[in-house]
Image (cartoon, rainbow, N blue to C red; front, side):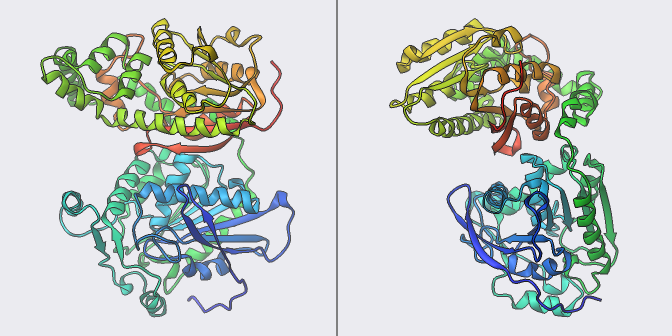
Length: 595
């Protein structure tokens, strides 16, 4: 039985500035005993939906060793954090908030992800899992209690009905149907929950639906996670379904993972009448996580040969992962693409130059539908609105945002030296540089295709930037192309590594980057950690080599490990639509490796 505990730790209350400038509330319980910086440890708690950080005091007391600090936030729209109760711009905003929180703990308190175990409940567990998947921190461990990967809405067709209702009422809210007695067998805990004035009963339908979509993505691509994981699952959960929790657990690549089903527990299993098993498992998990050595990130360098993505890529290349019905469907789509599709300017460019080519991407960036006979423009609009192309355009926005910040970080008065390894039409870099008219630039824009360089030269002339730009036709994977080159403040690798499955090839470019990157320089790189339409793309579209466009998504962890070979460490990432694309910045923290 759980007993009342005397409070031995007092929380310090504070706030941090999130990604959009919003200041969010959090609590900090300092370690009770002093420890050297190199062995500092912390637990970070994420409350469930509707709740706030004040309700984790009991868990802090139960789980936190004396030499360990604890932190907990009030999620946006909860507790003392601002925003309409139960609302946020979208679910991914909460994930970005959490990333900002973890960055704050690093900058303000000195806790890196490798010194932290996260303990997350319900919706908080999905926030944490999404953060680990998308941002790939070297987290020491993740304990998940009753993860809300699929919420029981009970009403038939509830999600489609909510999507339809939001067409007429975008700011629709849903009131929780869950009574306190459905969360826990403990009358005391149920009463505490019911009387807590900071608990919100509503949740935004927008956030609820986005949570469902994001959770589905994370469960589908759970193999990308390999941090230690403990999953506590309630056997009598009226709030969330067990099947996706089990699927998530089965798919994660973690060598250290444990699934504990507590048969008689309700959803709030950390606040149950009998918490002995749950508490024992969490305590042991925390102890084990901190006892394990920090894994070597270089283990990701062989993922192209031995990882789950390598197996999926091989199966897709051989057609083994595509059913007979899918093959028939793709064959029809491909035939339509080569006939009616040519009426669309975008599809025609893709067929002629490759759908992954610089010419094709430059057309997608412009986002102006065009085609023949009227119907061609209609087809083109549908083509440009495909989820992948919308993600590409958002990637461009993120790339320009990070590039702008990198330019501003170069000392004033100093010429900003930028190398773009695969510039395509050069639009993202040239348009960004144009907005810094007061700065001096020395740009080197490279590409393997003469047509791409001609397009970039034309844009540079249009923008009046020709005096500060030189253009070079070369292969980014050719080691000789980096010999005797200048030292660059910023190196950009956009849309290149996503096209090649072989890590040995990527490492050849990475070694070249290490040779030409200035001591305080940075690398901006894009990635494609996953894609919901891999099979369709492989079955219907051609790449720049005229072959089926088969892609091997790289997890963010694998991509970060490859870039770490430049002697850089990732500083930040921006995650795009449905997590398809990422844009990251890594900064050199050590001397350049020997050539």
